[in-house]
Image: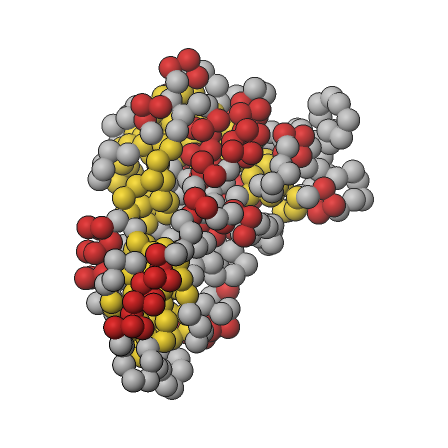
Length: 433
């Protein structure tokens, strides 16, 4: 922790001012401001690519007490625009900590603001909805009305997430996941020998890939670039001896696989596709939704997570809309409408699938709902091995209770899954790091 800190301020677009003390990098930040209700997991929050373009307010009163450990990062770097806390721990203590949160953010150019009344700020965001803001140093002479007004104008001039290519900004976030040698199930590994599982990376968290690897699954990560095509998604494997990177994708723990399918360039047809999480507005990704729509015309099993869930709904003919202040935390109750069971989930998203928008002839139905606000938390196809969830089954941060969804997906790959029974397959094995 730095020996000296200088005063700073957060100014929202509605003119509200929150004074505090700067930490992390000594730079200004301008972004949307959201709050996260998790009690731990600040490093995973900071490194979640879905937070690109946003400052995060942590509602837990003390942050940074166990330091930072590179092994628990969810990406190659922090993606938050800034971190806002009530109290930054003066000292960190954990056997695996490599550095303090302050030093980590400073090293990556991310500013922070402590000594903030985060309770008042959170209540403001809940009342008014997500707001844009500017975090800046406080002038030596104090906060003048003119200085505050200049920050208000700067905040109001910020583009919304829907107007930014935030997915493009986090491109490649999941490619650098180190292989995880752990395997939970040799049976499931044998079930996907015909091809790898492809992860469409819109800003995927590392633990999505790791959760598949632990089950012995070869994984190929394909970036959701502007030039994404169905062929690129379904034919990501290089010829023997070539690097996957030359095909616009990255391999993770990839072993040689036989050629499956027909047509030029088809090398190792995927056994399944995971539409992973990412930042921003799904409606701003029509090119990705179009590829997913083409994917629906194949017989390949599909699972969507967070943004991937929203893209699946768009591809099926549905629509999405923005929530008032999003869902950000590790304790959101979600009900499986098929079984009546309630799951505590980890969430991070600003947008939702509109339940009434799913066309009746598309074959999809709402499978899960959020018990706090009734929003859609999952959809599934009535006949085919295709489903998605708005929450994060991989957790990190948050509960690992929903890891069973990865097992269910792999069962679908070998034809043993039952769409109506997904809520009955509770995997009691802990599959966190």
